[in-house]
Length: 329
Ligand code: GDP
Image (cartoon, rainbow, N blue to C red; front, side, top):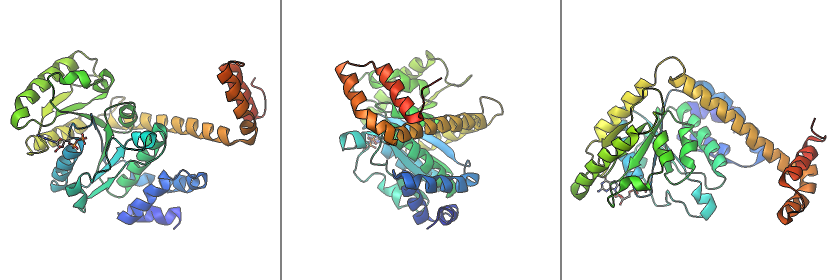
């Protein structure tokens, strides 16, 4: 199928076309990149209409249970929900933190839902890029809520925050000091915090965690001017608070719909430009590594730098000059 035909299938909401389109953008074959780019260009006019949500939290916080509960709620309210994952751990360790277990089985059975696991290979940058492209494809296929899930243990949150409108941090009450395990950097990018597992024996602890979180967030500089981070308690298990969480997400998204530099259009514009530059960087390095003149010099350069015979700076200049075919300046 041509990129044009695939784009048509995606825009018609054909799930098989969508799955194939995502497989195409996930392909690492250089000759697939041109097709993928043509496909993305063809669907671009049909994108932009979704709420783009990031969801992060430590393993075990209840992300997948919460996404299932929230997603089902959204579908019952008339939405179509796509769930994508960013989990670079799967390529690094061979095992994924987000898990290979069947996740979100109930949501996955709904025809209004589309769930796609993280690409199984690549660097964080590569995985994030493909997830971002998959997000656009889902939007073009008519999904008006896209949830990008990530594990709260590293750099992947920042990559996800850079592709979504709102970033939701999921926290579970646990051993007393819930805040200890949460990295400050992750708190700084949160637009909203959901304290999950506010049920049964954990209800009191969830209340305390919510208070502590509000206090801690109050000490941080607001991520956006005038933005107050809501901290909500909910239970993905019992469904308590899920309604309110969905309402709050909707209200927060509405708050972004202002003109000017703090508004959604401006945010997405900045994200797209940042994405373009990271594409330039990634593609440039990829081409550099494959260029024959560089490949001839690469091994010796690495060996010399390892042994301390050459400075990294001098070796870098040599490789760049070999790639560009002429000395700089
Ligand atoms: P993830 O690793 O963040 O995706 O967490 P999971 O969704 O896999 O949940 C981890 C564990 O917490 C599972 O055993 C869930 O059943 C449990 N869990 C999830 N949400 C809740 C909740 O709201 N209340 C309680 N009590 N347990 C929950």
